[in-house]
Length: 293
Image (cartoon, rainbow, N blue to C red; front, side, top):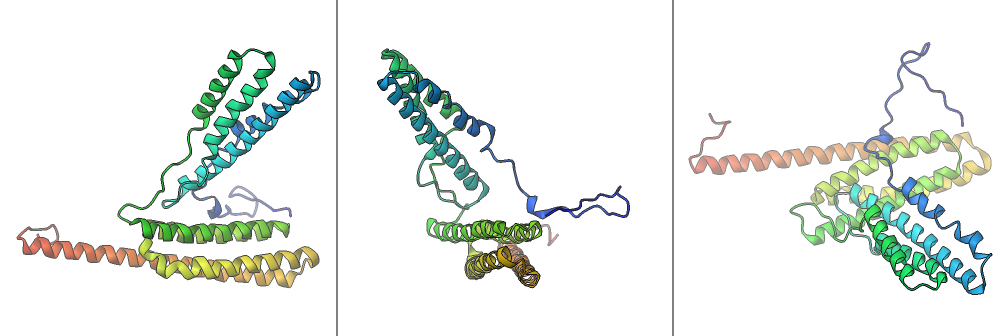
C-alpha cells in the first residue's frame, strides 16, 4: 500500500495534481476537547475500589454516566458538523449535546455524593453542566433550508441528500475492507463528484427532478458494486475485478460531473431569462437600463 510522492523539485518528477477530495474539508471539532471527556472519568475507577460498597457503587455509576455523556457529546458534535456542512438539513432528532451536558452534571453530582455533603453535589452539577454547555454549545434546534424554498421542497431535498450521504458512507466503509489505498482514493474522488451534485441540488431544489436518479438509483448501484468488489478483492486480490471496478468509478464520476455541469448551465440560463424578463418590464415602464443605453 506504499505510495510514492513527488514534487516539482524532485528528480524527474512534476508537482502532483491537487487532491480534490480535500476541497472544502475542515478540521473536525470532535478532537482534543471531546477526547478529554473520555479521559476525565478514568480516575473514578481506581478510587471506587478503595471505598465502602456505597462509595464503590456511586463511583461506578458516576463513571458510566460521564462516559455516556462523552459519547453523546461526540455524536452531537459530529451531527452538528454534518448540519453545518449542508445548505438544507433537518435538525438532529435528539439533542445529544444537551443530554451530554445534563449527564455530565449528574455524573459529577453522583461522584460528589459520597462525601455526605448535600451542597457539593449541587455545585458539581451546576458547574459541570454549565462548563460543558460553554465548551460545546447547544444542538441545532431548527431545520435549515434554502431561502425562498417552501418546507415541502426542503424536506424532499433533505431526504434525498440524506439517502445519498448514507450510500456514500457505505461505499467508504466497504472499500476500506479491500485494504487498497488506490481504491480508497478513487472512491473519495467519486464521493467529491457526488457531493458536488448534492450541494447544487441543495442550493436550487428545482434541480432535484433531474438529479434524483443520480443521487438515488446510481448511488445505490455504486454502493452495491463497491460491496461486491470489496468481497472479491479481499478474498482473491483479483486484478481484473479491480480494473473493472476502477473503470466503473471513472464512468460514474464522469457522468456525475457532466450532469452537475448541465445543472449549473441550466441555472445560469434560468437566471438570464429572469434578467431579460425584468429588463422588458422596466422598459415598458419607461426605465432605461444599462444595456439599452
